[in-house]
Amino acid sequence: MSFVDPTPAPGPAPGQRLGGRRAEAQRNRERLLDTAREIFAERGVGASLNDIARQAGIGNATVYRHFPTRRELIVAVYAEEVTALCAQGEALLGRTHPVDALFGWLRAFVAHVATKRDLALAIPTDGQRSALFDDWHAATRATAARLLTRARPADTPDADLGASDLLALTSGIALSTTDSEQIDRCLALVRRALFPREPSVVNGREVDLG
Image (cartoon, rainbow, N blue to C red; front, side, top):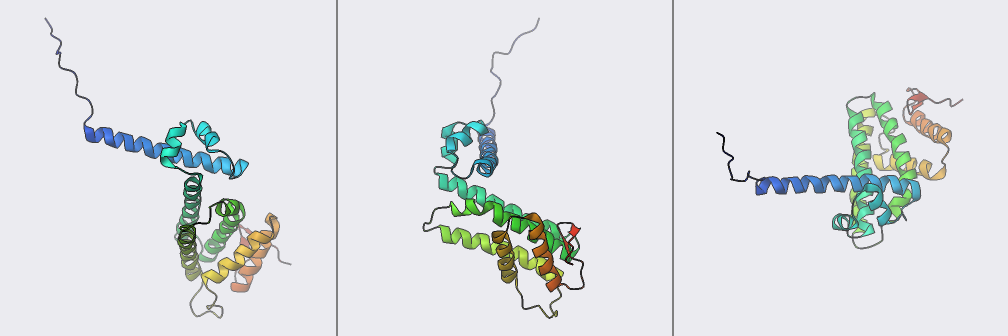
């Protein structure tokens, strides 16, 4: 004869419940950021938070719990874009020919400036905006500096050209044209000026400068 134990099965411990809620909150936040990035790219930064919540499959209350204002969502999306750009540079440091790595990353930097400019401009001017951009610019400069140092010996004639100078030149390219061929040609000209003995390779292909 068998007996059924009337004692209810123990539920998850408080720590497990808390960990589960945190994991779910993190998943929701990541889903919101991914969806916001897609919608901002498709419709512009004026897209409504309600549309973002609907496409992410998340309730409005959850959206506002993570991002109480549109500003906070835009800042979070742009911060992730900068982090991804810098991570791409770090990955290139260890795996690619040094000059190819530098100009492969500069090509990605041009795309970042060209496609994320509206997102950056949408961040309202307030007491925190300058500090945020200072941090983002510092991270980008640091990545460029590491790639440039690795690509160029310190005793070369153009060693006084720094990462900030190179980023200013590259930003000018990004803001002056949207034509992919012209962008590659401009970067190839910069490459030839800095590294005259290197082939004019940009974005994985040699650019004809004849």
